[in-house]
Image: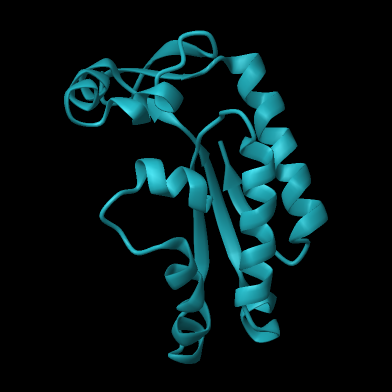
Length: 146
């Protein structure tokens, strides 16, 4: 996820720049390298943040890595139980994760009740991000997006 979002949500993990710097090392070691663009969290300026991340991805990856690079794109899914936990230990994160104005309930295959971006809205948001990828990282093959 973009650096600004990661600093808020992906705490206690390696900075995004360090993760991007490892791409060529993994390819050189013989691995097929994919990036997991998730969760896609919608907030003010989210598309600008993704544009910056795509530029950083292109800068960090060598031509050989970009030639085989693929991605998975997954929009945020959240749930009330985790929301309640986060309100106790990391409430600022919930400002962007828990968005009743943008989300709807969804029952998962496992039977849990989650929230996701509303169906019609989600398709448009996903299309906007896929358009950014096509423009700013045309080498990046999207394996799947939902």
